[in-house]
Image 1 (cartoon, chains in turn green, orange):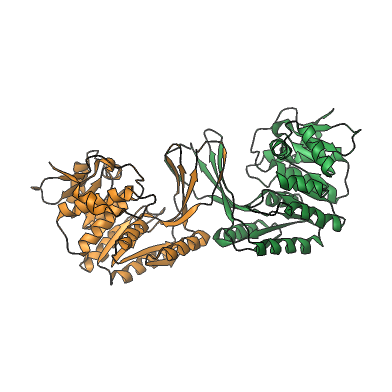
Image 2 (cartoon, helix red, strand yellow; image 1 turned 180 degrees about the horizontal axis):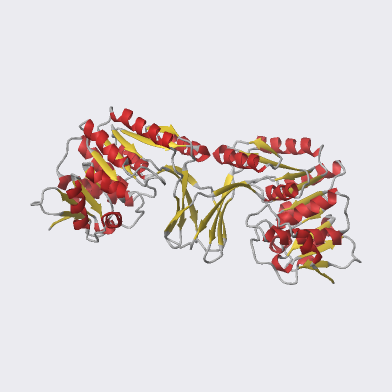
Length: 307
Length: 307
């Protein structure tokens, strides 16, 4: 089972408007309401592709109840630990004419120390039955910076692979703790390491202790950097980028890596291919947390560069 | 007690951003969440000014629970009848730089016939203890067009005044049922009657059977038209319009009229003065459902025209 841990989940509300106009009042259909957060998206894709997933997240308040109801209806296995704050919201407004999506992401409220204990205890308990541990997404305000590093240690103590998709100090500490795979995007990597060149930034995370670093480059695909200094940096991409919904594409890539690691795959170049193909397959879907059935065909079409 | 009936209430979520940019992701503080809807705003102002209010509304779902919790905390007396649908949301995004507010109003879901019965029964029961009945705001989809007309009849049967703030066929039918006071804004009146001149539109509602029609003209104040064909049309306004938040200004005007009617005031010109002053006092407040304590001073400053 692939355990995904999402410390700062959100109730995702999506609105569709013909044309969003600032300062105007828009009459809209009810929001599509969905249990969101990067680890939730990972678990959804793992589940969709027929693999065992378990999504762990804290939840609270009326938004938390709505979050739980949607997640139950989705069929994705989950473990939700009650906390003292309300689950945050994220509002997406999709503009049909302009094709643009405007997003308001609530930062989330700080978890109480007791809430963190509950979440960490739940992760430790569920890790005993896991084959891989994934930590994804932002941390709530005032979070312990070593939350993801502790997840990595939980995995190492049990001989399990770990994948962390995070940013800032949480990413650096996860590297130092020896995460099996890190998957920042180019911007997060630059913000976290201060290195604008993604290869240089990725090497920094490797020096810190990470096993493999996959850096998503948006329409330019993804690169893979490993501890093997003699090995080339590998980049995978589609010859022509897909047009679609990029939200959750990185999460689908994390799901691909988790599924591959659990089946015993460890070749970095193959992990990169799977991650890039599943990411591309996510772009073809209207909502995050799903991939197109064409992911195998997309993988066969990848252009691979080594440098 | 002033009974306000809000058939299509909303959970109002308000976000503050520095500058709303279409197509961008904005990191925001948690939404201010509030029990909203025009009749709720009326009840809040009635309550704030030390008068007895009772806000009746249907509610359901997780949004309904959040709605109820905020309303309880506000101290405004309420009667919420459980229905089979989820309470709709309304999202307001306040742009600090541009000073503009962008709004997404969910239409709301259709109430089941059994839900309508529950709501109408509750209104009839509570009307027995009311001194005035107010019906405010949009109707949910597929609503009976005579819902507000039936409220007017409930009031008439009990010898009580009624005030309806509605639009379209619901406004026309409320006029035909003999509403004591109707308070559309200029645009709603034009849409409902097909008359672009607010005086002509208001006279149409009087012909249909309404007692008094107050038409809010935004920064141009408010006019009053009555069944007395010999009486002049009266307009009240401030010499220079106030800058502020117009949301809920009309609702504060309705609250002023309800409070005046309950205290035995019936002079249309005085009702107009109160309504205009309370509306202006609402513009000075950051949220709907509140008025500035300066409403008495504002009333003394009104410019009155008769034509």
